[in-house]
Image (cartoon, rainbow, N blue to C red; front, side):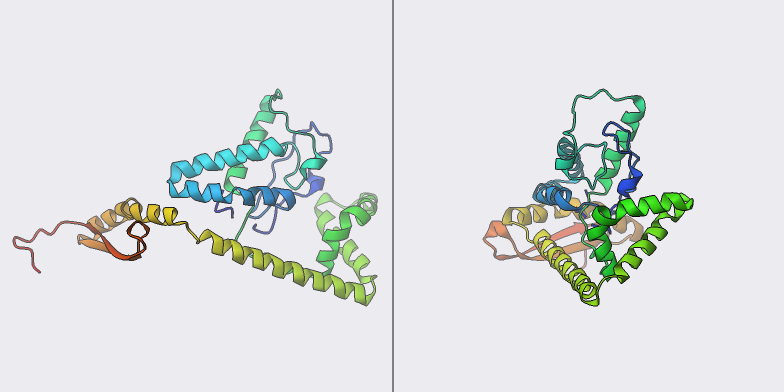
Amino acid sequence: MAPFTTGEGADCDDEEWQDEPTAIPQIPTLQRGWAKGSCKAFLEAQLPHFKTATLAGRSKKTEEIMAIVNKYFEVYSWRLPVTTEPDAMPQPDQNEDLTAKEKRVQGEIIKRMTTFTGISSKLPKLQTRWQVFKHEKFKADMKATFNTQFSASGLAEGKRASKRNVFVIAKFNDLPPAVQEAYMQKGIEEHNTSKEVIEERAAAEHDLSPFQHQELIDRLAEFFGLLLTQMSKLLKMHISLLVGGPEPKHGGNLNVLSLHIGTNKAPIPQR
């Protein structure tokens, strides 16, 4: 999971999935930031574990990602859309017998989950008034009517999304001006709330404990050694890295650390 890094949501509409609980789902095209609702809360709760594992190196980070994904699928069934809340789905069956096709699809979903973990530092776009209205009202109040009208139209499936927007905008325009204005204000409030959450998360990600701070300092050579060695060989020059600041293990007193790569080949080193 990246730092659990919310793009603009998942590219998987609930209409793209079959309704039968045992059906093989389509593989969703996840984008950064797909997590919503309880899914997002679940992943955000894993951030402290992820940050700690990241400090221990790439292998520990990978192990933690897989552990989090496994925990996720103990709560959320792999068969249903990632946007479905757990109380609306059957409990995952850990011992179910899968066909070869089911195993392939399940594996691909898990693979994508390890890449796009649902939480992003990117601020979502400010939604228009009718988009806020759509997200709040479409599924409950308009979806059935629209689906009936679209099916009767005989239009190609590729036209569904654009026609759905036209349908929703028409419904929105029928609302009183005061109601339309309320939806605009709601969109602004939701945007500002998202901005505050992202700013708080970014601040928290850089707020290391003294132990984490010292661990990073102790691993400076591991982090920069290979890079500086390759630079030294390429440039045929000696390279030094100087780091200064308060060090936890010395009680927060200022300290200067140095890392030197290369060899001085002069017969008598010059001062």
